[in-house]
Amino acid sequence: MSSQIMIEANHLTKYYGDFPAITDVSFAAQKGEILGFLGPNAAGKTTTMRILTGYMPPSSGTASIAGYDVVSQSLEARRHVGYLPETVPLYTDMRVKDYLRFMGTIRGMQTKVIKRRIDEVVQLCHLEEYYVAYISKLSKGFRQRVGIAQAVFHEPDVLVLDEPTIGIDPIQVVETRQLIKGLGGERTILLSSHILPEVSMICQRVIIIHEGEIVAVDTPQSLAEHLEGTERVQLEITGPVSQVVRVLRGIPGVQDVSFTDTGDRHGTYAVISKRGSEMRANLAKAIVEQGWGLLRLEPLSLSLEEIFLRLTTTEEAK
Amino acid sequence: MRSILSIAYKELSVYFSSPMAYVISGVFLALTGVFFSDSVDQPFADASVRGLMRSTVFFIMPLIPPIMTMRLLAEEQKLGTLELLLTAPVRDYEVVIGKFLASFLILSATVLLTFFYVLILMYYSAPDMGPVLSGYLGLLLYCTTTLSIGLLASSLTGNQIVSATVGFGVILLFTFIGNLAAVVGGSAAVVLQHISLTGHFDPFARGVVDTGHILYYLVMTAAFLFLTIRSVESRRWR
Ligand SMILES: Nc1ncnc2c1ncn2[C@@H]1O[C@H](COP(=O)(O)OP(=O)(O)O)[C@@H](O)[C@H]1O
Ligand SMILES: [Mg+2]
Picture (cartoon, chains in turn red, green):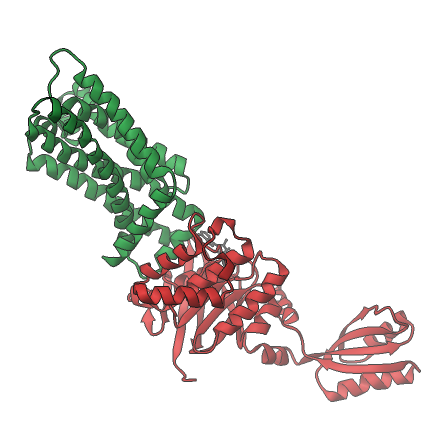
């Protein structure tokens, strides 16, 4: 993998009237990277993506796709992007194949190439049974696939996918995620989502955006590790629940304890505590001293979900 | 250029895959048929299509062009596909011109079908072909302007009915604005006469081909297409 930068955002700011939808957003994606763009609703994901795809210019800052500035070399930049907007825009009164053909022609593809690509993307996106069907007859999940098919149709270097699994049923969500994962490789993908497991499953690196500002950029794993030096330990303990919780809370360094009833005679406890093996030894000692059974002690990394909750809560606390 | 043609081609296939093209041509031909028989079914009637053309301009042109264009940009906004078009490597003006071209091809083909009535005249008598041909030139120019007004209306809204209604209103205004001239008088009257769509059409129907009148329709069309392009562009700034 070369270290060519395929997506670059430099200090992007976008105002809608007086309201700043994004402020000073900067990041870059290398060739072949799948970059997650994570944030709750109204964080500014769509706004950033619309700037990157040349739909609208930023109020200030610059951005480039494959080295082409999205404002001053807009057409060239747009040639290198495949874009799936959040709304999955489709001409519902067209057949799938005609829609794909049209998307090919407006991207300047040759008729012969279009023919070949229709076969390829239909297979890639599993649309074999539907490619002569009218788009209006397709379910949401299949429409999503048609949307992805048009985004990859011209074999772009960069794919920008805005919340591609929103509003489709769970089975199709799984299939769509696999499909997206398979699209990586040579291609650079920017994938926005407000669903954390999705991003950690698909992406190598995550940008977290909140209220229009980037609050963290890292791999899903090291984001978890670096977070405030805390870790989560899962324990299985036999003993009276209320007492166990009280004792665990009393151990210095423990920040939070929660109990999940597993239905057996013992329970599972999740402890958020200071990081380190010493801490875990202290936990074990305290439990054994009480005469309870310690069936399991396992350090877990924090899930992205929690990181995210933290990031957003610390933001709110400001 | 290729982008313009692909957009025009796509719009043409949508016209023909829906009843739209057939209904419009059918209604157009039925109405002009009525105008035609009305104009020849009179004592001492001319062997001309002047009456037919004048009625077409007053009664069909305010209505049919905005109906033909109402979908073109309004639907793109409603479906969100405008976002795809505006992020494809296509210039905004290519989108607008492509759509305009498609609507013009259908409408002009329909207009030219009415040449059938001229053939009927030729069978029974010898109509003066000068005014006939200049009249058709005028009609085609008239189509370009009314379609560009309709397209502008379509760019302003995501609602097709609103689009057609606005287009209809604006064309109607430009159709009858000359009649206001008599009311206001003075130099304002001259201006009103000058921008009236119908005022510039009469010479064509009488067999006069004047570059001034040709230019009027072309400039009007260019102006409305320009406004349409600006209106599409403005979607990027909202
Ligand atoms: N066209 C617009 N006009 C005005 N405000 C907008 C517009 N689009 C988005 N916003 C606002 O900008 C903020 C960011 O929106 P958006 O980029 O759509 O966020 P996300 O995609 O992360 O949900 C939101 O507060 C939203 O209300
Ligand atoms: Mg969004």
